[in-house]
Length: 253
Image (cartoon, rainbow, N blue to C red; front, side, top):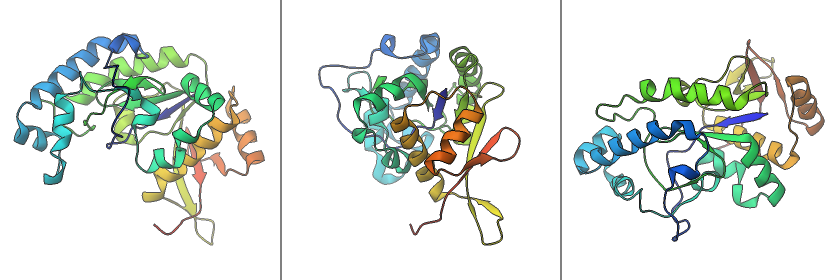
């Protein structure tokens, strides 16, 4: 089983001060040439503060994100699962995972990245800022990543069950293999009609992934996953073709 997660635009500070980015330590080594090109383009852009803030779509209070990009080759690193934060990762709560759950994540979780293409959950990475809609001069991100990342995913997945929890923007940077399942988070009204959620989308996905990591079951197929979900009280159900509906309760923000 392979779980595909989006990253977060915001990143936690800190990391191991004695280690810096080593592309050879990352999963999916076939993507190293594309990673080098993306890093070089981002660092060139980040030499000019104003141009970088415009291209990265940063507001006036986020100038420090450009400095992060300038320093990313020298900055401390930490596992990707810990580096990313935001709603999904807050709900997943990586610091609270026990050793077995972290090991399971290392084997079964892949995180999308506009800078690195794909990352293993435990890959050591620095803080950086780059989004799917960022404009890297001379390097259109979808064209740069889609083919190589899709090929790397297909090779890694093989015949495994693939559950895609990425946003559509990140899915475009590396389309999932045929036969994968795309998760949508929905809520039901009193008549049973379902509506896709926005704010609660990431939280619901984070909670689902946390429960799957804690359970530590390598589901061989969709019947196994849906059977586990029923037993665990998780409303994960077939939706449109190739999709799963994660049915959650709406909560106050």
